[in-house]
Length: 445
Ligand SMILES: [Fe+2]
Image 1 (cartoon, rainbow, N blue to C red):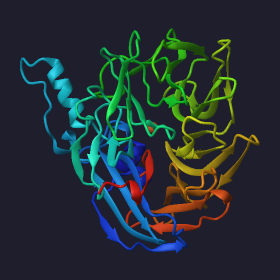
Image 2 (cartoon, protein in one colour):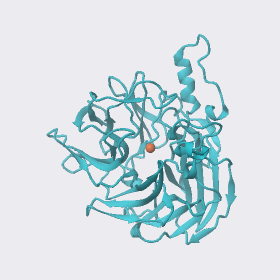
Image 3 (spheres, rainbow, N blue to C red):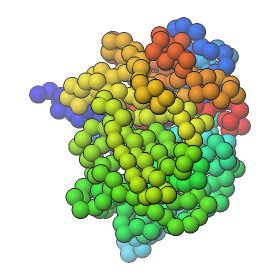
Image 4 (cartoon, rainbow, N blue to C red):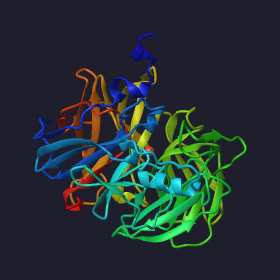
């Protein structure tokens, strides 16, 4: 076996890290970029800097950005997130030092900061669930750790939710010491207005969560966090720990827990409350963490009767569900996913995008062609028109034929049709995790 074949999947082929931080202007475009798309598409992912990472999740964060303006692709940049780990800083603990001091330093070091990147209150935040977020400027240079003016002293999830009705950013932190779970709400200006401990008897892996108009939903699974982040995955599957969803009133009040079949929520698509008060959560679910593949799934909770329902929506292997973020916490129609079709040696060699339509119960595929493997797609609204299909979908697509990557733009009204445009990027973008569309009006000045 060659050295190449001996390397784990996340260090080779389309996953392999890129060596250079590149700035390129006026990128070639195949097709026609919509002139309404003015802003920056950002995407985070692991890009191990100095030494091989021990898990796909553990590489140093690198944010890739493509700025679109008036039908042109103005620039591409990729930048490492300058965490303490990036700089090689030893975070201790020093001899005789209290462990909590070293822990606080680790949180402020930003961890790997490799999972997601969002904009809130004019700040671009790069995030990983093991640490505090790192703030970036509009050109993706690292400003430093962001702790919401000292209000957040736990790790922060990489999957916060912005409520489109209030502008609030809802998020949480979980950790293997008390408080095991903390729920935060920051207002539209980025000030933390709620910080609440959710009582648990220990931590479980909580990669994602959900909000509805009146509630936050926490998914407690048998993937128990048995130690802190460090070498390897700190989770152990417990056959005795229940799978349950905690329903937490956003405005305060008692938490209610509801039991479900054993499973793990990989990623939330969305959640909402029906008119009768029933809570519906849709997301990618694995029957068992790191063992079973994810499928699109729904969980329902009738708060009045306490009755629950659950079930798979489809039998296809899918993950990275996204919706129009303007529907977060409200009924939505469309869910966009990456459908994983084929693997060779752990590497997805065939994948396509798929859109599920909750109104018709059908789905449609977007097959980008042979050897074209898309990542998560992000919805970008066309205008103030609130229709869920009035906009575009953006995804970085790897083209194996030329070992390069494009930013592909789809018309949401014609999801299965040929892309409107492909922006040819100046280098391959390794398969990564999550991204955001930041309209120009929201970018930091
Ligand atoms: Fe994620």
